Image (cartoon, rainbow, N blue to C red; front, side, top):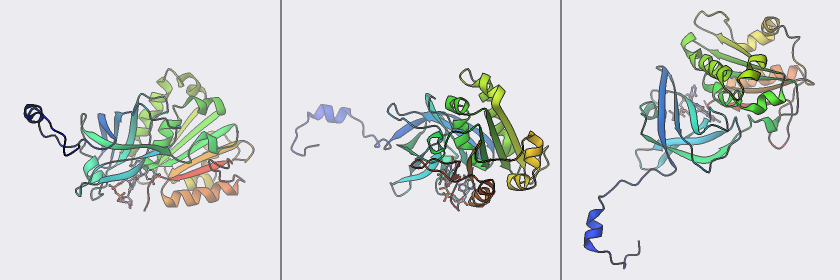
Length: 276
Ligand SMILES: Cc1cc2nc3c(=O)[nH]c(=O)nc-3n(C[C@H](O)[C@H](O)[C@H](O)COP(=O)(O)OP(=O)(O)OC[C@H]3O[C@@H](n4cnc5c(N)ncnc54)[C@H](O)[C@@H]3O)c2cc1C
């Protein structure tokens, strides 16, 4: 405000002192906790935000130092959704998630409306079958792509693999697949094309093991009745820990697939689910 500007005394005193709103604030509309390490939440969507299914944005809260504390988060809903969904880890001493895990409907978060990322259809050449390989919260970008109509327009078969340590950590993915099958936009096509392949590494479940081991020894292909992968037909997107991503690259390249990017589409793309 111009310091020389005169304001009537009664107008100034009628305005109660308000804390400044968060920059790029969005309001939390829904929160669901799965385990002591995992939760999902939905927030209002900025009216001007456009994104491609599979991309990520920076979200966060105001830090104790008065500066925004932001982290990368995959948008876990398709581009047509009226709100935005996120699927989050809770790191007990994590600067952001030690606080973020306590958000409630009505609270505000910061959301920078600049979506980016490589897990997008534009980064892949046309093919017949797409594989979404995920571990932990790495399923989040596929929660977007699984409900994206383009996924079913582009491919005859869509295979989602999700590997977690414990059975309870698979719950979000199970609900996601159910919601996808019930979705009025993609449900019918998904019922024909979607294959869900969950595995656990620690707790007993119907399918045990790391996805990388199950690919290397051919278990996945035997289970699904598929003769391996080939660069002519198969496309893949990978989102997990650094270890998973490195191993998956080696496996996919062993089948002749090449890594693509927005600027140079090829047969597979990779993104980190987290750093560290
Ligand atoms: C491109 C990209 C997309 C991401 N999308 C998501 C997402 O959709 N959901 C999500 O929960 N996180 C996601 N992350 C990770 C996220 O940015 C933060 O690291 C996470 O929210 C923890 O923040 P923090 O400040 O509490 O702890 P940080 O200081 O960021 O992390 C502390 C440590 O916790 C571990 N850690 C962090 N994130 C995870 C995770 N997701 N799973 C397992 N261990 C983790 C790591 O060892 C890390 O060094 C993404 C990261 C990148 C780079």
